[in-house]
Structures are given as structure tokens and as C-alpha cells.
Length: 138
Image (cartoon, rainbow, N blue to C red; front, side, top):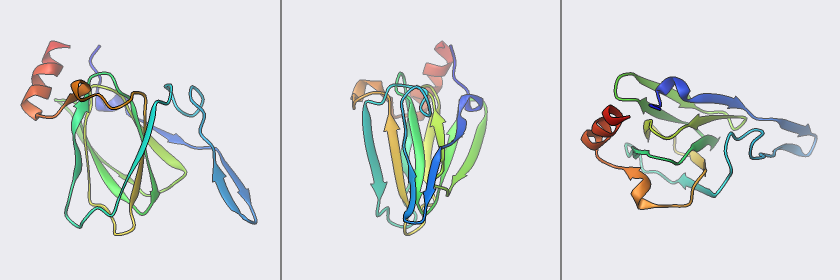
């Protein structure tokens, strides 16, 4: 089944507020629509640099701007959209089959990525022309 940018879903995360600060706890199959296998984060991105610029065949990603802000460019081979992440209480689920690239990082940006798979190079589609061929085959 071919994924589209319309399959990308905003998720408002459950927050516990207290006088000592706030906390967000994530649970797979509750807030995350997949089993968590890997967590990583991007930070100290130099001005003007972009990250991502690929699609996954099987891996789901859930991205949160835990600090600062950045844009995510979403592309399904037909439709394109730009979304802005700047709230640590809101994340974006990007399913497999959607091309994404992150850019316009603020100086203090930290992009937390929660993934459904461990790193596997064979899961990545890194060239856009290869991605379009992959989408056409779906």
C-alpha cells in the first residue's frame, strides 16, 4: 500500500504539569502507533544545513522538537507539504514510504526521533529518483 503525506499524523502528547516542571511519558501502541526500537536526536545543526532527505521502506518515525524549532518537508511523490515543529508536546508520525527532510533549524533546536526499527541501511531510500521508482511500484 502506497503511503502519502496525508498518512503523516500530528499527535498531542499527554503532559503532566507540576510546580517542579512538566513531564511527558510515551508508551508504544498508545501515543506511538508502533513498537519503539530506536531513539536518537539531532542537535547543534549548523545554520542552513538540512538533515534527512530520504524515505524508509519499513521504518516508522516519530519526530518531536524537544527544544527550538525546525521544518519537515514531506513528499509522497505526488503531494508535498512543509510542517513546522516547535512544541515539545506535539510530535509528527511519519510512516514508511514518505520522503522527509528536516531544515530551518533554530540555534537551540533538538529534534528527537523515535523509530520502529533499529538502523538498517537497506531500509533507506536515499536518492529521490529511486524513491519515485519505489513509489510507482507500490
